[in-house]
Length: 185
Image (cartoon, rainbow, N blue to C red; front, side, top):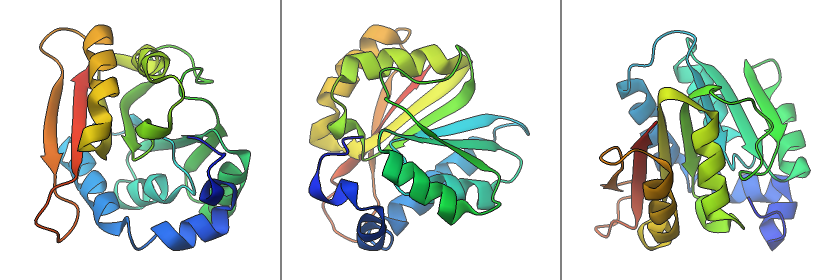
């Protein structure tokens, strides 16, 4: 959620660059959410949503869920809102370490490839824990090597035994570069 990188200030070029490249990961995340079998009305938030493609895909595939997207960049959120049109997705400008939501708001918090940009990983994880409802789930997808700080912060903020990590296959490459860090509130 760092708006200062060169591509992060230009939502149109960022979206054009990542839309196809991240399609398999986006499909994987939507499939994971579908497999979670969340009941109707459950609320899902995508942290570091960028141009909002993941929340739009979730809403299209799983219309029984309430979907939000959050990003630090106002330009990305403006772009996402324009792309959404009348899709039932809410986009909000916010910092992962100071989310503009009350406690116990979400049933599932998802973040894809943004955790390595967070300025305050421990603060971000604490705030993600705060906005999760009891029994809610946290899924952070990122480069395997980049999840070390988040894993330590998750172990400090979530109950013992609720934290897991698994390799994610999201490309045709034989090397698996991504992983999903999971926790349950």
